[in-house]
Image 1 (tube, helix red, strand yellow):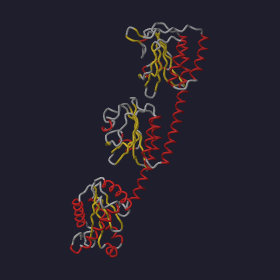
Image 2 (cartoon, helix red, strand yellow; image 1 turned 30 degrees about the horizontal axis):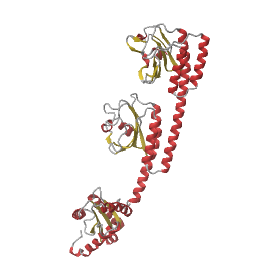
Image 3 (cartoon, helix red, strand yellow; image 1 turned 60 degrees about the vertical axis):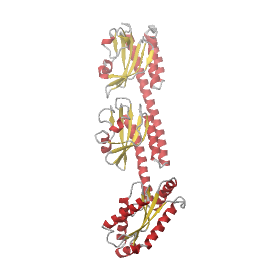
Image 4 (tube, helix red, strand yellow; image 1 turned 120 degrees about the horizontal axis):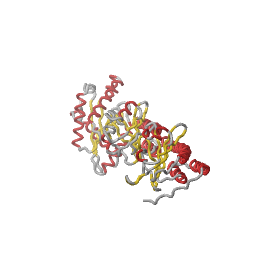
Length: 504
C-alpha cells in the first residue's frame, strides 16, 4: 500500500482562484485525452485532499458513464468501468455534490481495500459544456468531514475548465483523425489509379479501418455471392477472419445489409445468431459494424469491423466505414470491369468458349506441368461439310450449329479441362490427367451427344477428330501438341470412307 498522501494546506479564496487560473492554463494547453486526465488529477491534488480521485465520461444517448481515470492513495490507474449515468445524482442533475460522511451509502463508486477501510467523504462536480453534462470529476477522502462548500466550489471551477479542455482535446483528436482519414483515402485513391489488383486496394482499406476506428480489433471485406453466400476476400487485425472463409447470411443481421443496402451495428457478437456460424469462432466477442459495398446499384460485398467493447459502435464509426466502403466499392467495380474486359479478350464471342489466345496461355501452363510428369492429351474436332451447310442454310443457321457443338463440348467438359474454339469450325479440348483411353471415351461421349442434339443430328453436319498425347522426348511446346492432334485428325479424315472417326 502507498504511504498516506500529504493533505494540501488550506488556502484563502484569492489564492485558490489564482490556482484555478493556473489550472486553466495547464489544462487548455494539454491536447491528448490521456495526458489531460492525468493533468486534471495533478492540478486537483495541489489544492484538494485526494485520497481517492476519478474522472467519468457520460454518453447521454446510451445513458452510460465510463470511468476513464482513477487514483487511490496516489496509485494511478485507468479502467473502463461503466455504470448507468441516470443513477448518478451529479450526472442526472448536472449539479455538484458534497458528502461529509458515509460515502458508501450515497455514492455509486467508493475506493478502498476492504469494507473496513473505504473512503468516507467526497466531492463530485459535473463536467459541463454548453448545457451538456460530459461527465464528472470526484475527489474522496478516507476521513469524514474532509471537505466544505468552498472546496466544492473550487472543484466545480476545476471541472468547468476541465470540460472546456476535454472538448478542445476531442476537437483536436477529431481533426487528427480526419487528417489521417484524408491521408488514408489519398493512399487508397493512388492504389485505385495505379493498380488493377483489387486485393491491394482492399488491404489498404483494411489498414485504414484499423487505424481510424477507435478500439477496432479486426476488419474484413466479404464478397456477397448468389444465395446470400459471403466469402472473406480480405481481412486484418487480431483475430483476423481467414481469407476464403464462406458462410450463408440467412438468419443473421448481415442479411439486412445485403438485402436492404444499409449499415447495421451489432453487439454481443458471439451470442445467438448475430454472426454466421462459420465466422463466430474467429471473433472474440464485443461489438461490430457492417456496411454495404454497392456496385452498379447492387450490394456486392460487406465491410465489417469488430471491437472488443461490448457497447455498439456509434455514428462516427459508421460514418468512417461508409466513406471507406465507397472506396472499396470502386475497387470491386474496377475489378469487375477488368475481369469483364479480360474475359472478352480470352473468350470467343460467338460460342462463349475460350478463344485461341486463351488456349495458348492454358497450353503453356499444361505443357510445363506435363514436362514434370502429368499426363496431357489434346483432341481436335472439325465439323464436316460445314461450308456446304452454311451456303445452303445461311450464316445464322451456321452460327446456331457452331453454338450447338460448343454446348456439346461444354457439357462433356470437366472443370480442370479447357475447351476452345480454334478457328472457323475447328475446336480443341485439352484434357489434363487423362489417359489415351479416357480421351477416346470423351470423344465417344461427344459423338453420342451430337447424335441426340436437335440442331446437329440431321445428318448434314458431321464431326471428325484427332487425338494427341504430350511426349516429352519428341515435343518441345504447345504447337507440337496441336500439330500432333492435327496429323491424327487428317489420318482419320482419310479413313472416313470406312466410317472411322465420323458421326452423322
